[in-house]
Length: 300
Image 1 (cartoon, rainbow, N blue to C red):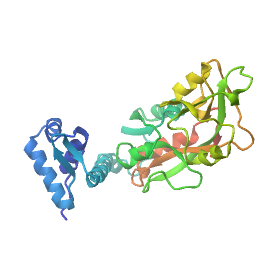
Image 2: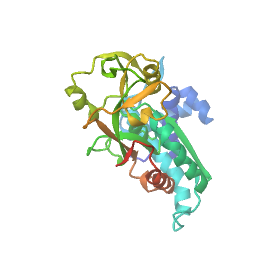
Image 3: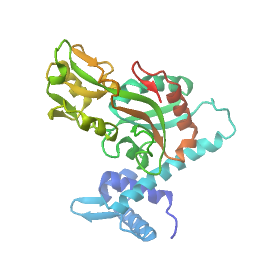
Image 4: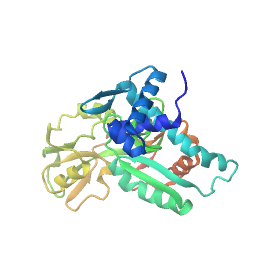
């Protein structure tokens, strides 16, 4: 197999993102025929069909999705190569420049990232963090890293388990327990209807949840934890939520412990083995590890 050239990798990424050869050509400032030729060349070199072509445009096949993920990661390393080489031998606290792509789920992005990024900006004003909020469902933030859309992801991690997506490296930052959120002053909060949201129940809570005979079936199902918190504060039910989702809760909401052995989860970071050694990602990890934790959270 002949190696793919950087311009071919960029074309694969553009076609996947635009879902059209024509739109990809316009974005890259080239012709549709040049894009089509490059994709055929990539398919020949890789020995697989990468895109389904049709009236719907161009959709990546399973092989194509994997090829595009590799393409993004390789292009990111090529972009980092110059700064990394020029910075070889410089002190660890030398000023850094360039983009730093972060994927995070909402609650940790709201309550952990701001002070971390403030300190990072003070030390490295030339860095430009780009934060994307990703729902922690399925492959979640780890999938964004594996697919090359993020350099580092803040993710929920199973106790003692492997990274959420194979091939990544991960480390815990803190542990958080779950708590009962209910309307303030309610005499029997455990008897209220259950408000739940799609991201809530993972493998770290499933066994505990199954053992509880007092939890009713969900009555209200929402997509976002902030909506769940607001509904509970308005007296529409109770919710069982991780502590980060309850930080900065609105007036009218009370938080109670779930007993001596509540469910808990770990929150940490994931990145790729190759990006873990780059200066910008290392600087971000240092700030994450040294960040003071909000009240109610414990270092992992």
